[in-house]
Length: 121
Image (tube, rainbow, N blue to C red):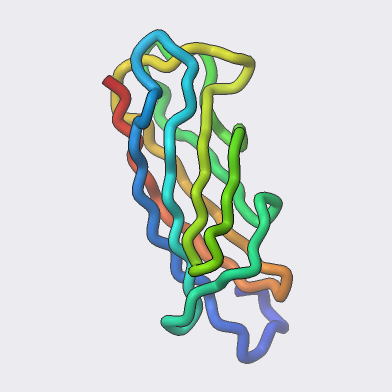
C-alpha cells in the first residue's frame, strides 16, 4: 500500500499454474489462475495492464523467461483471472520448475503479490 492512501486495503493474491499444452522443447502456452480479493471480497474490475509477471531462477537450458509475456488474458468476473504465458521471443520451454512473482495493482492504488510455480515436463 502506498503511503497517503488511508483506508486502502491490500489485495490478496492466490495463484496456481498448470503446464497445459506447454512441454519441454515446445512453445505452447502455460496456464496461470490468479484469484484477487480485498478484505475477503473478489476484485472483479482488473485488466491485463494491472498484472506484472516476473520469472526468477533460470531453468538450465531455458533461452528466455516468460516474464510479462501474457499471451492471453481472461477476466471471468468472479475475482478469477486466467493468464496464459509463453517464453519471450518464441523460445522453447525447458523441463523444470519455473518460479514467478505476480504483482497486481488496482486503479485505486491497492497492491498485492503472490508466487507461482510452473512445472514443465
